[in-house]
View 1 (tube, rainbow, N blue to C red):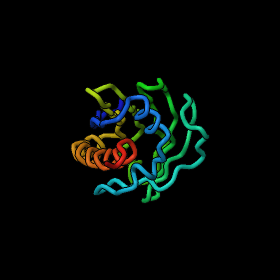
View 2 (view 1 turned 60 degrees about the vertical axis):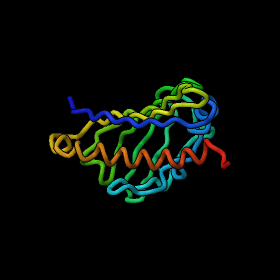
View 3 (view 1 turned 90 degrees about the horizontal axis):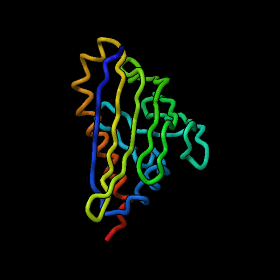
View 4 (view 1 turned 45 degrees about the horizontal axis):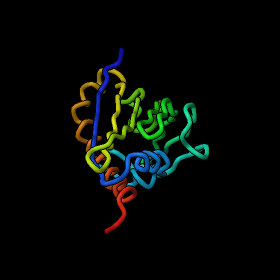
Length: 159
């Protein structure tokens, strides 16, 4: 069995739980993950996405600025609570390290706002990937932090 790298990032926003869920699920990925973080390339395009996005079994292709792609399939959708997905068919620079990813976005009440948690379980490809896994953790956290900054712009109206 492949080594698995567990990654997690959370933030609390002054927003209603259901709205945060709806906005995050529907958010265009190139608008949220539009910035490079060191070695992690931004998302530039999403291909073949059905509209509306949000039903188990739907698929789309994520394209990164470095030419890499990932096939995404929604695996779990619990409105207002969480949604999960599976990324595979990884191409480009990440293909040497990543076999597949199981991701999840979770939303829970936190005081008068919402706690949003994004997790990735990365199935690493081969022993060389396990060697660089300690480097992937801070890279992914930085990429996630930047994405959450964009998510904040979506969820929290300007004062």
